[in-house]
Image 1 (cartoon, rainbow, N blue to C red):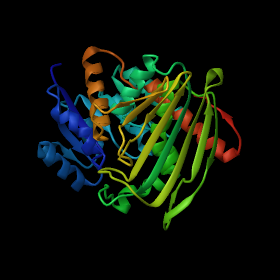
Image 2: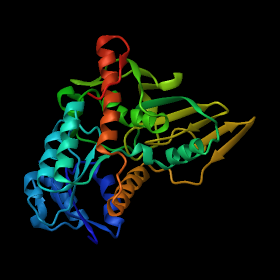
Image 3: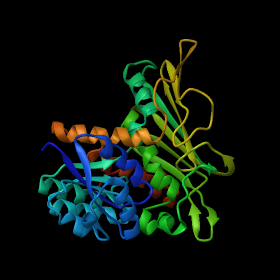
Image 4: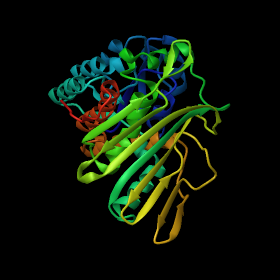
Length: 356
């Protein structure tokens, strides 16, 4: 195969970021789109050069096309499992947006379906491919701050005059736990943060969470303020703090949210100072070690680069015959991490992380 022909299932706002690398990479092309809101599919299809007869309101019609090799599934979370099983049955290679499913049992069904069909299967996670995160990981792997002891993540939902405007109807499902799996911040966006914990320090063993609730519009509840703490093997620890600051104005072109990460090792500390947007005029990566401060600015910092890098990695892995990141099994591990936080908050106590 010289070129990977891609069908996009779900053409909401986030699909623009997923499409960037597919459109730019000489080894891929977007040949079909599907969305229940057919006007969205038509608009994105025109922008991406998709033929009119390859634009659908039902993803089943897209899956029936013989000239689609891989599908990018960008649907609400509760639809991921069935869409993945259907795509595998149609013989399509698959990239499914995180979180891969609402339960580890569903994740297992998806993994089994992909294996039975012999298709490539990636759970799309972009935060671990954000350039400042990649630089921090290289520093950690190079032993620059010794052995990692802890990871601390601070996430601020806020406001911005330049952020995406998402119609209320288009994001209503994010506030419905039956469709989302949890809340917008700790479960949905939180998956990214738990993926960072997994990426830097491996799978957590035990999680304790307190998840709050803030009504931001009638019937729209943000799971904030919240704090989640966890324990890794060998006594190492991590924490995620999530807050909604309605009067905090951010510089961002995407979601009105930003993140900071602190990695503490046996001989130094690394800070990743930005994520979705920009809050401080400081370098994106800062390291302290041996009574000296080192800064790193020689990298792109736009959030879109995390999508570009994740998609490029997948394309490279596909043509090299190598596993992607995240594999289905890795996606299930991060999902288990995420679900453990929900269970802990429900029970009011620490819980073990299990993938069964």
